[in-house]
Image (tube, rainbow, N blue to C red):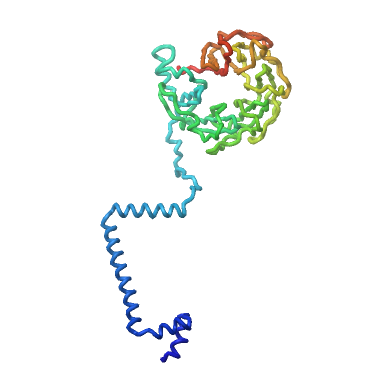
Length: 409
């Protein structure tokens, strides 16, 4: 074909412009051939270089791994995101708990929040040698505040100041020797910022017709079926809806037929029938348990037991025990009666406990002084009284903490 026919065909087939088509037709054949040859030579040189590079990689395992790492990292940076699924052990038809022996354990929780468990046989074996403590004493500023015996398959419910509850099986608590203080509870539970454990309960099963009684600092109380807390989550579940400025201070197991006693910072107490409280849902806020002055707050709640006494300790180191019979039952929501006089001598109430003669007491001051005494040595006197001196304090020194002491023996 001549140039006149070639020009429109080049434009039609290759979408060249008129100028481009004419430039191609003006080139000599040897120039077109040279251009194609240069392209082939360039491709050949690239192939030779790539072959040499690939051979070097295949002959060097370290280089292969390095390239895999780099390419994997690039993929991760480009497409990676946070894991949205939880990897769980596939139990199949085998319940892993079936492989854990049913064994009675002694679980202890210290004042500073350390928890551990030990087989009860360890304690029995060590007691045969004589009376008293075995193993080393805990640090002076810490001591065992809660001690209970539970099966390795039982549950521990941890109620926090923010009104949430977490639970663990007893066998999930680290086993530690008598000389170890155990593991910090905050490292076992997925607690939020500012959240701390207020109460721990031991539960064998959730099928029994039992209840959880709870009280808040602002005087609210709630009664919920224990079964409502049988389906936990890693981040805990709501136990009591907490309003702004309030917090949960206590949780106790009850039969549904017992009496409840609330004690306040300004020395008031109210006793009311548990059956007067209706059962509420898990996320409810509760009802008014005691009406208080604006500057008052609840420091203790107890589910009363027959034969117990109420021990009250004040900020200036005074205290007393009073028989539960002296607290007559009232309607829930009243202002209560005087449990101890919060005079200038006594100061406000730091804490109150339901105790027996076998218990011991720890009193802690703001200067770090700790005194330990037997509950049986504290006088049992009337309700509307000032009490007796329990600890001698220095000038401007105050009691900041009180705890029942459990013996590890």
